[in-house]
Length: 271
Length: 351
Image 1 (spheres, chains in turn green, red):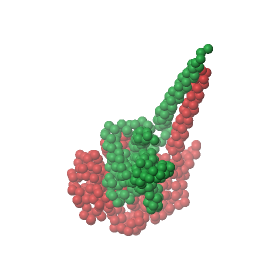
Image 2 (cartoon, rainbow over the protein chains, first blue to last red; image 1 turned 90 degrees about the horizontal axis):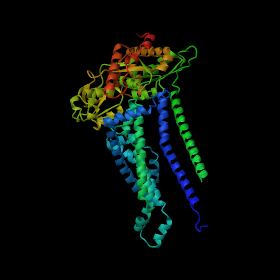
Image 3 (cartoon, each protein chain N blue to C red; image 1 turned 60 degrees about the vertical axis):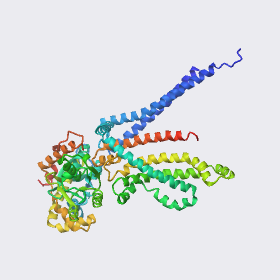
Image 4 (cartoon, rainbow over the protein chains, first blue to last red; image 1 turned 135 degrees about the vertical axis):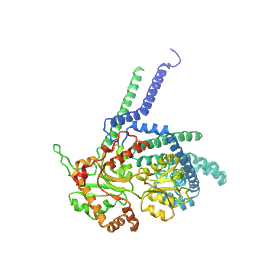
């Protein structure tokens, strides 16, 4: 009898486990792609058979036709670019403000108390509620739209920054105190690095909120943009184009989120 | 070993089957919800017996209208609808900011009749909403114009290229702007066309944030008296008018109610002609305005008429063609002969 254990059975078991894991992965990917395909097919069939009210629920084919028409005419690219520039600008202002106010609120309890009521009242106000006021204050040019988006982006960044700073492990700070490190060093070397994961999450959520804000910001006083496209389609009774606009917002939104999540993972490899 | 693998595989396949079932159920639920939307009960069409159609059983008639639509407002406020229908039918007249806003309510089945311009009427029809135009509401020989800021550099239509011009998308204002552009060989891409409700548009014009807008009375006169430039009237460029249309389902189920409604509007128009000052006061009060002169101008700038004629059909066909050329509608099978009916004005004894 061999003094070495017979590993052939164990190897065979590993092999079958690997096969079943691959099968599971394949099934998962099939579900990922298959479910929306099945949904679209059922939707198209329902439209073709007259089951749906096409005045309010257009078929996927008519939405696709609208997508092709807008792409070929170049308007889709123009509208997308107009919205994206607004979102980036709005996000930059909103995120910058959120980082600053969140950091101050996280570091200084007195600052947090001083701003609690004002921020608490402003936070629940939806972006769309601010639009008429901003148009009154800033006119119908880009500023009113960018600032509406900024007001949407600020809150996730602010709250996550403040929360990230407040939730630093107190033991780390205690160690720094024992080692007689000054406040600036504690902030730079312990508090801010610890808050980075929460901060990055806030930035990611802030950008998603900013992107969703284009519908509200471009509802009035716009000449271009994906939100304008939806308003335009609404006024002209074109539900297929409305769906197209919403589809673009949803698809771009999820792509942005995936990219930002990957970026976040990369930046936080040290965590 | 083979057994273990087979067991694992069948478990995987069972889970796959489970999730496919979930996906199908979800699709079915979504489909059912859409069907429920399709069959959503509209305002009140009345009941129809299986064997013999029972007509005119609706208890309610919901009529949408825009700002300052005199006969609808006066008929409601003076009680003419109540006189005509008594407790038999309740007439509700919700107010909207524009034709497209009414179209949304019609599409949702919450308005039975609507009053609006030709462009939004064509658009909602092109969106497969089953409607019929049953009468004019008003015809406009004058009073729609493009007005520009004095510092905008716009004195004639030849100067509008590259300018920022506000309009209400989908409305008569929008169509007029497109006609002005077409007259200069321009498209909306040659200007910055901005979607603004009329109030915001006027404010923006006064602030110099936009260069021009298309307006009607009384705003036209107010802006002119404040030094703004009337660039062009609609005369020669566009025929502006408003129609009454109804959801076909309601019209077919309640022809007598609809005819009596039109009769009441016609009677109201006559009453307004005989009592213009009182009519102006009623409408101004309804609109929450103390500008009686301005309200009077609105009334005087339009011909308030009931009826249909071949000219209505021809102009609607022009609007359909124009909408196709401008890419506002994609359907190519529309003919206004199928949209307009004189059945109800005839039943009302109006022609």
